[in-house]
Amino acid sequence: MSDIIFRLIKILDIGYIAIIYVLLGLLLAKTFDYLYGTFDKKKERTKSFLRKTLEICGMMWIYGALIYVVRNTVEFIPSPFHGIHGFSHLRVKELTDAPVFIFIFFYFQEFLKNKLNDYYTITMSSF
Image 1 (cartoon, one colour):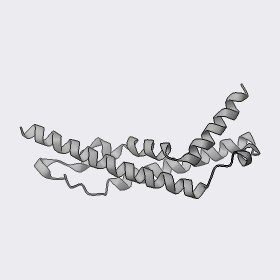
Image 2 (cartoon, helix red, strand yellow):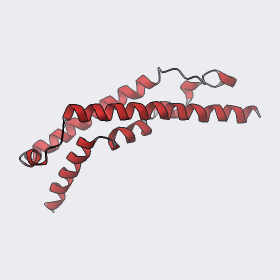
Image 3 (cartoon, helix red, strand yellow):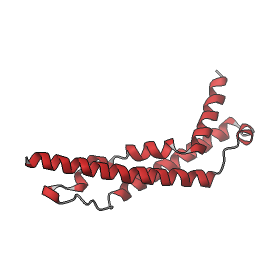
Image 4 (spheres, one colour):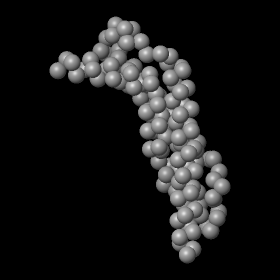
């Protein structure tokens, strides 16, 4: 019975972590959309292929650093489940992996989606 309670607490903590990552993902996705502004397809088409490539690489570099910071920051958010029946919040693998954050963060960025779709279209049309 103790094992079942421990696992239930772990499941609740994983849900708690997921909620934190979803909220941060939505907030930061919309923040970056605000910072980048509206995607202008006409303006994008005037840029060279090299410039488009470097811009996307730069965005991914920033996003990689941001994901690292978010992942390490979320570890410091206390869990209401820590210490119950010997449960340690810091040992939950989902805390140090951030797939929920990464998915939400990328999925809800309209500017990034439009930029990548345009880049893909231009790239594939040359083959």
